[in-house]
Image 1 (cartoon, rainbow, N blue to C red):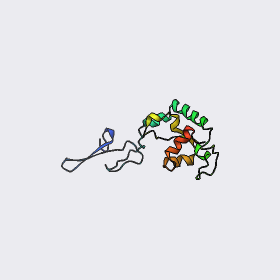
Image 2 (image 1 turned 90 degrees about the vertical axis):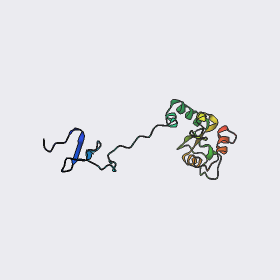
Image 3 (image 1 turned 45 degrees about the vertical axis):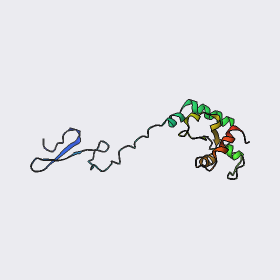
Length: 147
């Protein structure tokens, strides 16, 4: 049957003497033929493998603990409440999150420890992640040593 391709989108290219040169396949994502060096733009992005930390953040235990920490901290950014010179407002109540002072990837065992968790606004959270707010200060605030 002239002009038909074998199943699976495989096309064989032969020289005049019937010698096999190259095998091409149609792309399973777009149906076109690409050279072996090109990745099809229709190929879906690979999903990141979920880490233990990612699984933890979606757990009921974390959601419950996060709510407890926010309640303990009065639904306010603990750093802003200290009137830190970098903060603009004393009582920030929006954009809050609970920060792990010792990151999960460094000490997973502290993931639910009250003294390792603190409520921060987005600006202070970013500063804490960059190391601009010392972990020592954050631990003292979390323990209630500083009001």
